[in-house]
Image 1 (cartoon, rainbow, N blue to C red):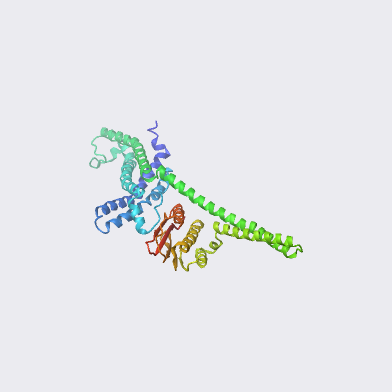
Image 2: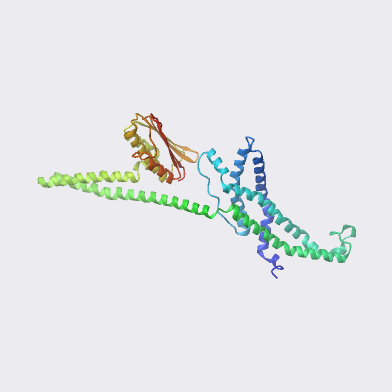
Length: 405
């Protein structure tokens, strides 16, 4: 009975719609796959590899194209592949050739259209020809002998045609089901991110959320210290100053003066703590903050900032403290006469370059320079730190961070 009721189920008609429209959906991606074969065959030609890189870049987008179609007819869905590493166009192009997700998506582009045609063609043929063939014994008499639709020369043979058509109509829904099931296997194998990729994506999203929460928490603590604790210390200092000036007893004045000095030192320490958590100058932008740092530097410093947009708080903080640490290193160890600070947007990365004309010899693994800490901070934000410091100088420290941390 299940076999007989197959055409009466919504699933059969959804799968039929999926296969018939899938022929059109998969045709351009199949052409993309054929183009990749041509590109691989002509990889020795200068245009071959660039074409293949472009094909792979488009293939990475096809899971989204197929997902909309599958969700509409079958209710299927899956995640996008993990993003490529940020960087220059050359770096991203090289990453494409090593990207398993792009190659798997390209494989699905090649397999989907032939598979869909294998399911859609019999289904369409059965729908168009099947009802006529099943009822052939009823209208065979109305067709002239020389125009026989199914090449039969007797009414008895029309029943054989009708039986074959009926069997085909019974089998086609299950054939479609097999094709759609095979397509689902290919989707899981080629388009859906693996368990490890999904886990990595979840961890990256969690890390981004934690960084945002940490930045917000630091801003809140900085605000509370500035508006609360610092204001109370200032009030206490003013009260002690009044006691010192109005008291007629020397011992009281001396005690008030000592207490006021302690309050002043506490305020200075509190300001240093607040500045270490979130420098107030960052509220006015990185260009202002770095210019302020350069103005306080013991070594004359020149600042150039060319950013397309304001970076996230965590990234801005990392860049600010990196410049502060590097300026301190230059003043203590480099014996330099000049420092150049350059911060600019380089594609999807922010590139900070600090160059001094000192004696050189700096290394990330050197003790006491803080470069190892800067490298760890850059790595935590999916960035990198490099040091070029030959003996005799100059020293160039470059930190790159993603624009969207």
